Length: 384
Image (cartoon, rainbow, N blue to C red; front, side, top):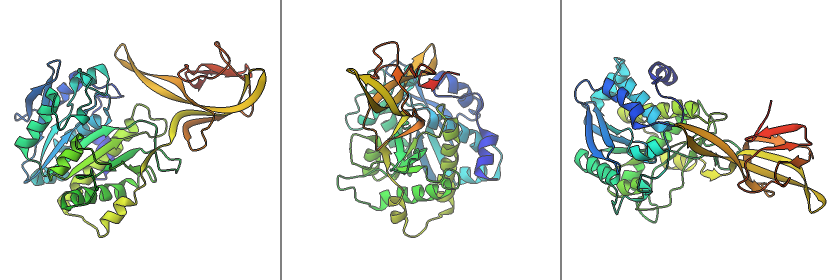
C-alpha cells in the first residue's frame, strides 16, 4: 500500500491542530497498551508523567522523541499516526516490528505542551541542556537513552513559518539534519548512517512536495541533544516540520512527517543505500529565514506631510487563549524586504495606508488597517 494511503488509513482522528497536551494523547497510548508497552519513566518540573511507548521485537533499536519543545506538536501527531500503523495487521507493519524495536517518548516536555511554550516550566530550553542536565525532563531523556542503547535516534521538532528552501520562494515544509559531532562538522561513519537515511527520505518526499525539503544548519553545539547523541556515536536524525501553504494547523505537514518516518524504516529495513549519498545530501538546499506570513507591497503612507511608497511584513504570534492557539498578526518589518517572501502577498498598487492609531505602520503593531479607506484588513487578512 502506498505511503499516503497508509497515512489516511491510520491517521489518529482524535487529535488535530497545534495545541496538543499529554492529556489529549494518553487515551491513544492507553488504547495501544495491550502488553505493557506504555511505561512511566519520569516526571516533569510540575510532576506531570513522562511516558515511553515500546513496540517491536527487532534487533535494530530505534529511539524517537517529540515535543522536547512544548509548542512543537506536528511530529507528535505524526508519531501517533505511526504508532497506529505499527499496531495494525498490515504486512509492512509486521515486517517493521520484526526488524526493529521502537521506543518513543511522544511528549518529553508535558509542562511546555500545556503552557504552549518552547521551554519547560523552569523556562529552560531542553535542547540546550544535554550537557548540564539541569532539568528532570533532560535527565529522563538521557536515562532512557543510556538504558535502551539505541542504534538510531530520531529527534522530532517543528520549525517556524519563517523558513524557506534557500532563495527559491518555496516554504521549507519538512527539513532534516544529520547533526555534527565535532566543530569541524566532519562526516564519520556514524553521521554517514544518518545522512543515508535523510537522502532516501528526500528522494521520496520530492514526489509529494517537490522543492519543499530543506537541510537544517549543521553548526556544532554540544549542548544540543542531537549533537550530543551523534558525538556519542549513535546516528541521529533531526526532523523539522515546517509550513505548507495555508496549513497553519500543520495537518498537511503532518502527513509528510508520517511518510518520512515510514521512508526511514523501510530504507533501513531494505538496506536501500545509494552511491554518492553525501553529495546528494549536501545538495538538499539549506533552510533560510526568508519568509513572513504576510507581505504588503507598494503601500502609500503619509510621512511628515510627504507621500512615500513603502512595503511592510506581518508575522503571526501564536498565543494560547482559553485552551486554543490563536494566530495574532503583528507588523514585523518595514521597507527593505527585497530578499524576503510572504506566504500571503498583497500588492496595494499605491493605495494609501490608514489605521486607527497614527496612520503609519509600526513594528509590533496589530495588523488592522485599511487601504484607500476601501479595502479593510483585520488581523492581516482582508475583511470580507
